[in-house]
Length: 253
Image (cartoon, rainbow, N blue to C red; front, side, top):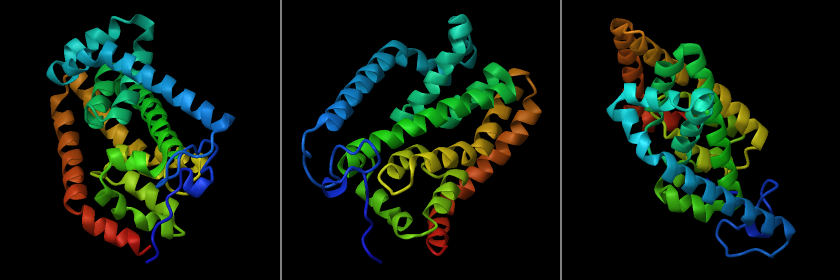
């Protein structure tokens, strides 16, 4: 099989509209576009650091005490929804808290429907940011946060004409490294709009499952929450245990 051709500024060509670095080379020619890219990245990194310093300590209560987390979110009043969406964006970008935990918290706070809606908004925005960061900084950056071994496992997406279908299935199947996959997708030929559609719809069922569990916990309907949680855990374990088999079958599509 030919070696995958990762994008994101490959060999002096801008991959997407932001390509600033080559995947295996150094700095590219300095121009206005690349300078703007660097400024945007610096602004984003500063904003991310400020957000982590401001909210990081409070995120630990999400796991330790759902009630305190709800109180913390509600303390922002009408801005609480924006803060929750921001938490979702952060967890996608920096891998601090398992996404399922935040999704369950969304259902616990806002109910199944609104919890799903707000989580979808945050996760989609976070995934698109990951995609664009990877598209700007290229292969070397993604390799610094995702192991080369894991990257090699996804080579077949590049060489397969059904790469976008495979990407959709990887996002849809429980147990796959979805947040890391958002970065990996950024160095593939997948178009930005297509990635937006993929991440929006492929992750929706799993997000709803988690929000539904949280909503039942919030309503103290522990029996239903337990039933759905058992189903979700079983699907997750199947996805994890059969991950290699699933990926081998996807390669043959």
